Image 1 (cartoon, rainbow, N blue to C red):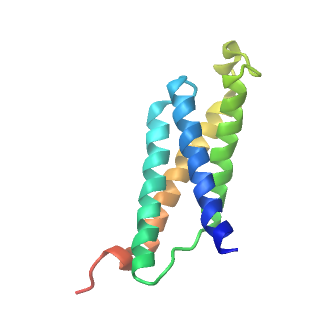
Image 2 (tube, rainbow, N blue to C red):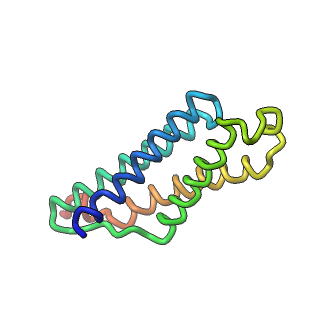
Length: 127
């Protein structure tokens, strides 16, 4: 439905923003990672707004979907740490946590750049 197509991405964004802010305030996710993720989300949303005003759309890429999956994995793992299903003394020994954080940073930055690179016609004037 039209309502579902609007609310689904919005719900994802609200979950991501709230989750990362909470995990950063609890020192589970480093603040620079949260800032990167939020900046990318707002920048891509801004690009989508520009596209809409010009009667165009910005399609979600495959890597954009991977980005969402990896970000949600961080939120699940971070949530487990928050409620201490994973005791704090183990956090430093969880190489998988570091790997997932690194992957999240990489795919978030890459897809943000990719969206802008593929859609330069939306925001650059042609001469």
